[in-house]
Each structure stands twice: as structure tokens, then as C-alpha cells.
Amino acid sequence: MTITDDIESRSPPKHDDGAVIYRHRIATRVTHWTWAIALFFLLLSGLQIFNAHPTLYIGQQSGFEFDNSVLSMRALQAADGTVGGYTTVLGHTFDTTGVLGMSGPAGDPAYRGFPAWATLPSYQDLATGRVVHFFFAWFFSAAFLIWFVSSLISGHLKRDILPSMADIKALPRSIADHLRFRFHHDGRYNGLQKLAYAGVLLVIFPLIIATGLTMSPGMNAAWPWLLDIFGGRQTARTIHFLCMAALVLFFAIHIVMVLAAGPLNEMRSIVTGWYRTDKQKNEEHSA
Image (cartoon, rainbow, N blue to C red):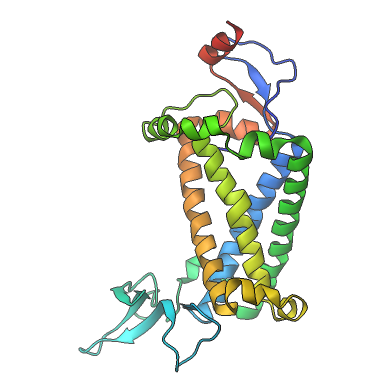
């Protein structure tokens, strides 16, 4: 699965194993790789920022006198005197020693939410994490704006991202094909792919940008209505974290689908723009 734009061929040469079509315009390829790089640094620096206070809340306020946390990662001492890492989700506590709450070597454990290997920088440094996070957040937002405007102009948004009624009706077949790793290399998205990309590009991306702005004191002063929309800065922080988790899940599925669908063909299309289609599909279209 890759983000496509224009699927019209530019005099595609014929081959025994299918035609080669021009699938990705330059704007799509540039924004795709900009997002990939930016999200990598945003994730690691975001976890560094989260570690400064590894607890998420719902509501306007947080603190010792409130009981509105929905997730927390911390080190606790057990009845036998041993210390371990524990993660609490909606009131249910799990022992996550070695990964969340407490990690690192047994002789020199680190009491932090996420382990050192998952944050940027690896050591606890909130100031550096914030600088890196804000720097790449602007690149991410600029790429999204460029993609959105160019997609509106080219018709890519309507043609390749928003599912049609025919796509919706064909969803059961699309789901079944994906579960059986059956892929049709005709250069077009099916309904399941369109729903996935629409969810990421038109829901998660705008949400993660908006909630990021809501957590900024400067933006609170300029646009106080953001706090009303998201129910406070703490709720915005929780939504921001959930969006990040959803993107990590999408990325994992995305990589699996790329490998299953043919990594060389998929990578070539998002690097050069050219994509090889199935021979059978080409014969059907020319019939």
C-alpha cells in the first residue's frame, strides 16, 4: 500500500508481465517521504516529551487532587520491596517492567515512561525533545498543506482517496482479498485502501496538527476556541497521543502490505513514479 496520485500512463510500454504506468506525481512522492522522515523524528521526540510526565488525562485539569487519568506509566514498589514498572490503562494495572515505567539494565534501571531506545535524545532531556519536535512539526504541517492543495487541484483527492458508492459496496471483497494477501496490481485503489488513506490523511493528520496547536500556550491565547473544541489541553494531549498510536499501527500494516504486494514494484513507484501492472488486468482492459 502506497499513497498514489495520478494513475494515467505516459505512453506505457508493454511487457510480458504487464504495462508500466506513471502512478505517482512528484508532489505525491515528495510529500510521502517528507511525512516519513518527519513522523520518525516526531514520534521519538514526542515520546521524550511524554516521559516528562508519563500520564494522560481527560478534562481541563490534572494533578494530585484529580482522578481523571486514563493512562500512566510509573515505577512502583511492591509489598516485597522490589521496584518494577507498571502501566495503568483505564484503571487496570499491568506489570511492564523492562519496557514501560522502568527499563534499562537491572543494576542501573531508568525510571521513565518509555525506554531510552524509543526516545530522542535517548537520555532525559525535555528541552531538546521539544526543539526537535517543533522543528519537524512545521515540516509535517507544510507537507500536509501542499498535499491537500495539490490534491484538490489535480482531482487526486476525489478520484483516489474518497471512496465512491461502488467502493463501499465492494468492501467485503476488498477485505477478503487483503486477508488472503491477494492484490490486484492495476494502479487503482480499492475501497478498503481508500478508507484507510482517507482516515489517515483527512482525520488523523488534521487531528494531530490541531491537538498539537491546542497544547501550545501561544495558540491558546490566539485561538482560545481550540480549548473548547477539544475539552481542554489535557484532553487534547490524550487525543494527540492516541493519534500517534494510530499512525504507528497504520505504519506497521502499511509495511506488511508493501512487502506482501511486491516491495520492489511498490518502492519503485513511490521513488520514481513508475508502476508495473498485472498482465491479466491489462488484457482485460484492452479486451
